[in-house]
Length: 175
Image 1 (tube, rainbow, N blue to C red):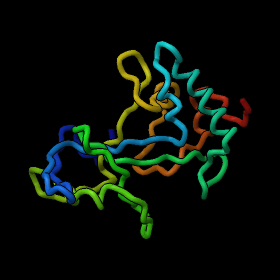
Image 2 (tube, one colour):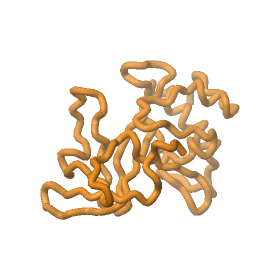
Image 3 (tube, rainbow, N blue to C red):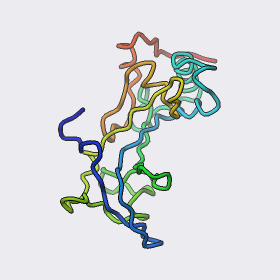
Image 4 (cartoon, rainbow, N blue to C red):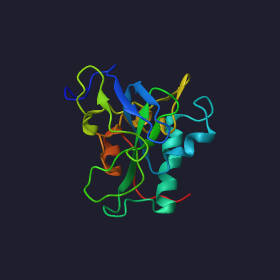
């Protein structure tokens, strides 16, 4: 783990702006690579992480699901802020100036660390580990499970060429 990442168990205080309800809990960055929800209709006992990875790679190439600025072979990564309660899950705040997509900040106040009252540094939130095995089937977890790939905070894309290190033939394919 990055020593600059907030340690597990760090509690944040923030308020739901519409209801005024204060929340206290952990916050993490949740990542979703474009198309990784293909795992939604599968279970680890039905389809292995490697099988899902191969199906996902075909999906990426068939749909040309590449990052709009970076192009081939970069697949977009979408970022969310996830609380330890089931009700806190919003797109992460933009870290690039003038990026105005809907995100956490119109819905919640800026989180402050409970013990110190320091405002959150979004880049230091821990990034969720995603798994694909019996008892731990996370949406899109097949990517990390099959390859060991886990993005850094706010990494904009997965460069398919890095999958080569895990022995994956990432090249163009068709279904």
